[in-house]
Each structure stands twice: as structure tokens, then as C-alpha cells.
Length: 183
View 1 (cartoon, rainbow, N blue to C red):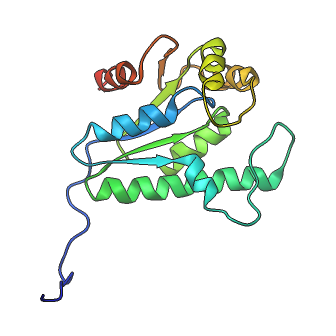
View 2: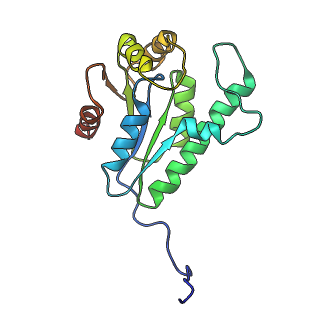
């Protein structure tokens, strides 16, 4: 069998038509919606913030309500890495769909700065805290039962930014349809 040659092979093509940043609190449906949304395109990539965090195999720190500068630094590192991947996929004609827990204005502004110049669509999944609690109760993952403090931060700090969807009574497919209907 002849050896394959990649000489002259272009990775980047016409840029993708869009890029998505899907945010919300844990249990809002970000990962399910983002994976399904990416599958709706001829070429789509799901970039999961949680998975990028898991790449730090020594010294990883998760955000917490207590002030932790190292955890905050790693949160921004994960956002920057998601943006780098999104830019790379976008340039190659693959629609990037990032999902991440973003509830603070400074965190969102950091993302937006690193994704500037992309045809970005910001989607905020905002089911009621009761709907989130029901979803979390049915998961195998062990997470905190009450994320209402993050819901309050999301609604207070990010209200009016992006396309908000109350997905309390929506299926994943209905949510994806609503996202795509927004243009």
C-alpha cells in the first residue's frame, strides 16, 4: 500500500457559518443540547468546558463559592482553550458549539473577547431551578442538589445578553429547534 502524503493538504477551508456558546448552570441541559446541535450541521464540533478542565490531571481546581484565585485562573484557562479550539474548527469549516457553566459577567466577557470576530451566537439555557433539581436527581453524576445561587447570579449578571431559553418544559430536540429558529 502506498504511503499517504499530506503535502499540500489544506486543513482550513471556507469558514463555518456560525459558532455557538451555550451557557447555563449545571443541569440546564448544556451538554445534551450542544452535542445535539453540533450534530445538526454537516460539520459540527462539540467543545465541552468540563472535558477541558479534566485535561488538567495534576493540580486541577474546580470553581467554588469561596474565593480561590487558582480555580479562577483555571476557569479562564479552560475558556481560553475552548475559544482556541472554536477558532480552529471555525476556520476549517466546522461549526463549533462550546458548552460551559458561565454565570458571571466577567467570565462571559472573557469568552466574548476570545471569540470576537467569529459569527458567535450566545445561547443561555435558563430552566427554572425546580426543573434543574428534577434533572439532577435523575443523573448518575453526583452534584450539589441546589444550584439556585448560580441561577440567581446568571439571571442577575447576564440578563439581556444573548438568546435566553426557558427549557423547563422542553425536550433536547425542542431546544435545538428553538436555537436554530433564532438564526
